[in-house]
Image (cartoon, rainbow, N blue to C red; front, side, top):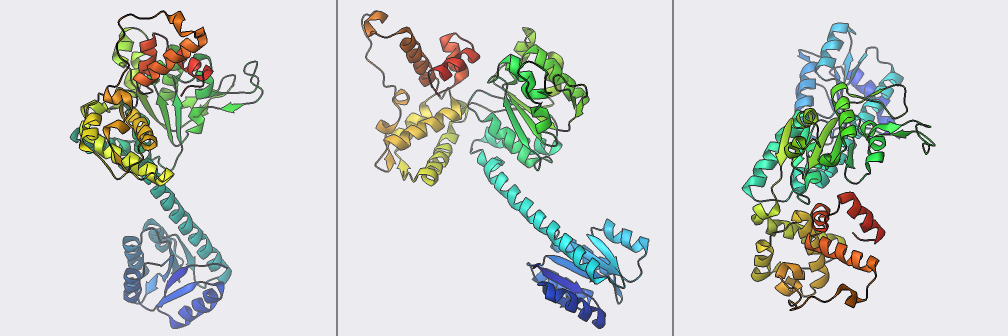
Length: 454
């Protein structure tokens, strides 16, 4: 049975009684008013109204006044107009002012019931969307970017303005600073928030597969194409495509990306027709793109296409005042998820955290908190609860380096140990670790997978 609270405003007693007889048996709760003034008073006093049904002519007052009051007090509540004149002019004026629909006298009872149920369905859908938006804002909004430092406050202020502009955004910053979190917040605060947010890490996919991931492919486009696949561009239609580590993209893929940004059309591999897409592109990089342009590794025309608005996230070492707030947020999350109860951190332990240089940035701090929640059992964090590399704890210096063969390890075991040490020193930062090891990022990712390292 239908449910909902309806406000009925009708100055004719016979018509008001008829509407009550028609709608009451349907299960609706009815609020009845005989004048526009009384109806507006009920609008102001009753927050649980789901639909307003008002006559267009209410004595000396127009139902349009009720409509304007309803849109001002309860903007998401639909308003259904009843008109005894059925003129196109009055109906059009009501619709322009935001009426859901109108029905002409004499009222067809079945038509009225259908219109009311459709309007209430729209109302419920609007409420569901608002609830979903609130949950998304809570999970991905700017409030999720924990900070107290002035430079981060200015960054968030600028990001809010950019989010509303629906333009391409380039986010720069070291690995682990939270570039994807900022991209999600921009999407959530922008006009495409109701659309999808699709992310792709350009460095995590081999060059041979990157283009098929971006543009999709048709069945039979290549040997292993057993069926068609939709690319990330099409998946992000009417939403946002986030391309992380854009500096790692091949020149071939860059050229095709530029064409999509210019034409707003995608050509799947092996396809005969292009597909129109409407989306926002947000890119992120920890590389110096102007330097890559000089070296011929990045297209200058693509750079200017992507760099409409640039946001730079400062490294954690340049905003150390954010560390206590981040620490509190991470500990609170651990408390909710795993029941960890840590009440406070001692000043000397906090001084160590704030004095560390954090090459892995916020991600490394998060990993350190994970270690702390495992190691700390007394409810307060002391220096000995911190990871050893934060406290400067290391093995005593040896006078003479031993032969590697003396360890009795295989080549694979030595390689795995080197990978582990590099990842530990960089706080899990793959870019920094690959530089220490003097190998490419893709090679490091392959070997991490080979040895089951994270």
